[in-house]
Image (tube, rainbow, N blue to C red; front, top):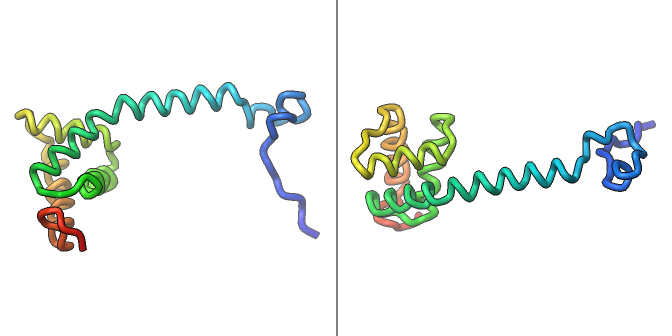
Length: 123
């Protein structure tokens, strides 16, 4: 016989104190966590959009392709996309980009170009 499936406490159980696992479901904590995540996303958005614009102008790619290039660099360097975006926008204004990021960006762009996506075309 199979044991019953485990589940997290429901809102009603947590509210009524009907579970020992009240800490597993705290609506107020979940809302605060979500608010903080949205706040960070809203603060990161402008620099990410600017970096996408720099990539689009510099390499002739479409917005989604610029995002994919940015993500590829992020994944290969284990760096947050907003940090990559900041380095790209800083470089556009004359600040040198760190050599490792420069190399990963060049690789990501080269990969995109060799897949037949030059000048905004899609394959």
